[in-house]
Image 1 (cartoon, helix red, strand yellow):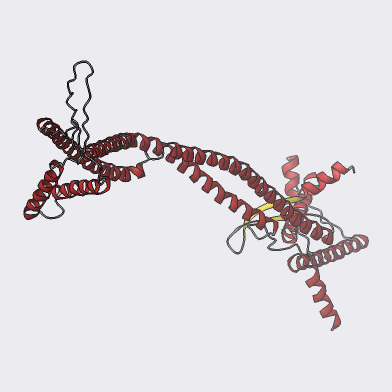
Image 2 (cartoon, rainbow, N blue to C red):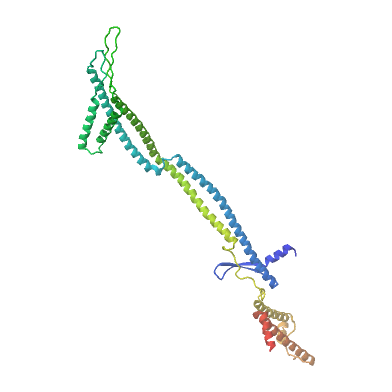
Length: 441
């Protein structure tokens, strides 16, 4: 036989049948038919072990392939997740201050800026009123000096003594009196009282630091007219303390204008932030939705990757769901085929049928007349007389011998049938043991 024929012969003698195991799980049996019991047992066990080994290899290869595929998909998803995170981070960095979670802070800052702007504007109005009052005082001082005659000495010059000025002192006293009257009506935290205190403190500080002793308040000199000899009247001078106060107030007004401008710019910026917050919220929701979707996919794939790694390790260690041998092949004590019981019954039936058929055939082909009726039936001639069979000595011996042979053959047949029945229903080993036990007696 060629190798292909040998393989085909072995393949034809292998059979796989799905059965139900004793534990209730699905199972299948692998059987092999052959003429040598030991060879059949070895081949059956080898087939079972080979099937389990190949199944483990296939399962391990599938688990490794799944793990490798999930590795690639997980790396791709990780890159996509990092990209979305970077885009979300860049969007937050570019729109810092306009994000939805910063809306409450922006509104609080806007309220504070509005209050600060109102306070600054009120302070600006007070300073402008103060500046207008001071300008009026300066104008009144100039008019008072113009209307006051200046005495001359014998050299035609004005005296060098300082001219006393009562306007600032009167103004300061008036403010102090106004402050005392206001304290009788309001508390110390009233805006009017605070404003009066600030003005009085400013005037007192300027009067203290800017006053110079022995310095004339104003000098008026005469100029000689060479053409006609007339004297020009000197131009009156303003008290430097009033000018200093005016300059200070002007600087304060400029500073307040700048602060108000800065506050208004900040208010405009925060208003823009508050107006842009709904738009940023919609854009941020879209980015957050994409990020959450990708993160969910990444988490799901990561868990599947861990499960795949666990499956690979379990397959490698053969601790996962796998096939196992429930009943290994054992050395058979009796052949699986043919079935001796069925063969015995078939042999009995075949023997009886064969005997009956042979008797029928012999009788069918025998043309001899066995009784007078056959003559009358077959020839149609009436029988007048019948001559009995004359038994001779040789015929009698022959008949007795035939009867003896029939008895012997029937006895042998009965013995063979009995032995064959015992072998068929009890097996060769049991029959041999039974025979040995009776023989030993």
